[in-house]
Amino acid sequence: MAATKKTGGLAGVTAGQTHLCTVGKEGAGLTYRGYDIYDLADNASFEEVAYLLLHGALPTKAELDAYIITIKANRGLPESLKTVLEMVPGDAHPMDVLRTGVSFLGNVEPEGDFSNQSKVADRLLACLPSMLLYWHRFHTDGVRIDTETDDDSISGHFLHMLHGAAPKELHRKCLDTSLILYAEHEFNASTFAGRVITGTLSDMHSAVAGAIGALRGPLHGGANEAAMELISKFDTPEAAIEGVHGMLERKDLIMGFGHRVYTTSDPRNAVNKRMSKALAEDAGNTTLYPISEAIEKVMWDEKKLFANADFFAASVYHFMGIPTYLFTPIFVCSRITGWAAHIMEQRADNKLIRPAADYIGPDLQKWVPIEDRT
Ligand code: COA
Image 1 (cartoon, rainbow, N blue to C red):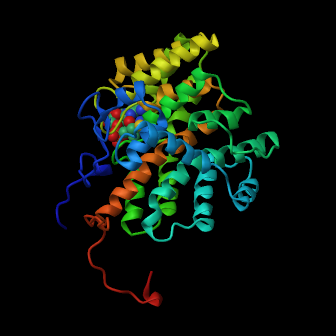
Image 2: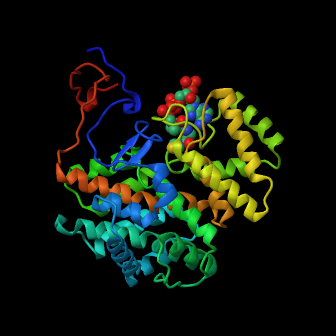
C-alpha cells in the first residue's frame, strides 16, 4: 500500500482563493475585503459590513440608506413558513429550526437561475431573525409576533422581536458589534461546507442549509452555548479556577478556547471582552465577568490556550437577556453574510470541489458467493 501523508482535518491546507477575508495575517489578524476588524467593529454598522461582504465595497450614505430599506422590506415570512414553524416542536434545537426554515423557503421561494442570487442573499439576511423569533415566541409565549418591526437595524429587529419591545441602545449596539465580529471567517467549516455544495451548481438555500448543519456542532458555532453552560456552573472565580483545573486534569475540552488558525489570540476576543465588561457593569452583575476572566487566565497559564470569539460572546448575549439556546442561531443571522458572499464568489469562478483520499482499506479481495461465506 502506498505511503500516506496525514492531513488531519485539512489543517494547514490551502483549499482555494478568496477576496473576502484574511485570518491570522494582516492588521489585527482578521480583515473583511481588506478592512481591519477593529475598524469595522468600532465604526461600522452590521448593515454596512453586510453590504461590504455581499456587494463588494463599503456603501455610500445613499446606498446604505437604500440597503436598510431593502432589508426591512424583506423581513416578512410567507404564511406557509409560519405554519411550518408552528409545527416544529417547541423543544427542537433552534439550529434545526433555522435549517428547516431555510430549506422550506427554498421550496416556496426557489432561487431558480442564479441571476437573482444577491436578492436571495438579502432575503435570507433579512428573514433569518424573523424565522427564529417567530418560532421562539410562538412556542414559549404562545404569540404570533409581527416580524415586520420598524427597527432600522437587524440587531434592533432581533431584540425587539425577542423581548416584545425596542431594546436599550447599549444592548442593540453590542449585538450589532457581535454580528460584525461573527460575519465572516474565510474557509471555516460551515463556509467550506457551503462552498462544496455550491461547487455542484446547487442552489443558495441548499448551500446555506448545509452550512447551518456544519455550524451547529460544538467544535464550531455551538461553542458559545457550551461556554455559557460552563461559566454558569460556578458561583465565584475561585470555584471556577478549581473546576477548570479539574477539567483539564480529566482532559476535558473547554469550549470557547483554542483555534485552528490563530496561534496566540483571537482578535475578536478583545472586543467581546470589552462588551462583556460594559454589559456586566450596566446590569450590576459582579460575578459572571470575573468568573470568565478567571477561566481565561487558567487556560492561558496551564495550556497556553486563548479565548476564541465564542467565549466572551456567551456572557455578552446573556446580559442582554438572550436565552442560551439562541446563541448559536445568532451566529447564523450574522454568518449568512459571509456564507452568501462565498457562495457568490464560488459561482463566479466555479470548479467542482472533489478532493482525493489516500486509500487505507484492505487489498483487492476475491468475490465470495454468499453461500460460501463463513
Ligand atoms: N480545551 C482543552 N484542550 C484543548 C482545547 C480546549 N478548548 N483546544 C485544544 N486543546 C488541546 C487538544 O486537546 C490537543 O491536545 P493534545 O495535543 O494533547 O491532544 C491540542 O490542544 C491541539 O488541539 P486540536 O484539537 O488538535 O486542535 P484543532 O486545530 O484540531 O482544533 C478547535 C481546534 C477549535 C476545534 C479546538 O481548539 C476545540 O475543540 N476548541 C473547543 C471548541 C471551540 O471553542 N470551538 C470554537 C472554535 S472558534
